[in-house]
Length: 315
Image 1 (cartoon, rainbow, N blue to C red):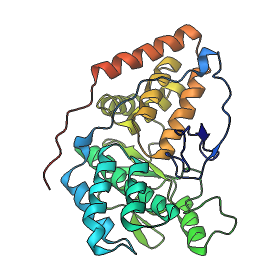
Image 2 (cartoon, rainbow, N blue to C red):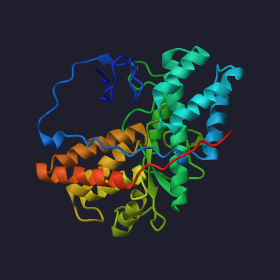
Image 3 (cartoon, rainbow, N blue to C red):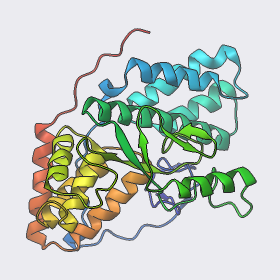
């Protein structure tokens, strides 16, 4: 079974590129699953809700495809249909890469680069629209501590990549307007939008101010409200609050529950990785009985929150 040496994602047999981060993968023997129940991963997942892909998200997806260099105009409708299908499927990287290679005849590396960029832009807009619907107008830029470069593992990064990474690192912790973005490296942008950007954001709740350094019970309550509506970012933040006791009593069972839902909610790839790591850390503090109780709670939550039915709109 091919496993990615970059992010650890387990891919299906025959994969040459990672379905999570796009890096080339090689067949690496995977040891037998550990018997320690603390390392058990929940098999349940929260399905992506296609109804969050609004008309404006679709319009911007089409626009971003039209702005791509080296794409023949006659192929744009086909590529748009493939891209939209992949977004509606919850960031199905492989299907879009295959379509780009088949329709446009481009190299695999370029197809993966375009796929990640289109998906990141669509995901950012979906999250922003969801946050706006909850009354959230501002967010904090968070540098992911991974170089914001097209190929961060390249021995000779370009000057543009180095400049972008430096600018995004400097943006860490800055507050910005969701509708406008942040002025970074001479242009207005948002986390995860630029090619190679791995930054994420943390929502600023309506009643907080830039000077609010510590979350309190009110902010935790707002995170809970958003988390219970299926917002993966809020679920991750609520997990952090529960694991550290910020604004709520410290409770590793509660933390595991929210981290597990956040990891399954398919937010930005880097946030998914953070949620998985945080879930494992929370699990290390639990007894087998407590872990089993947390996993049973996840199962019941998923059963009680089925994905919405969706009928694609006619374009």
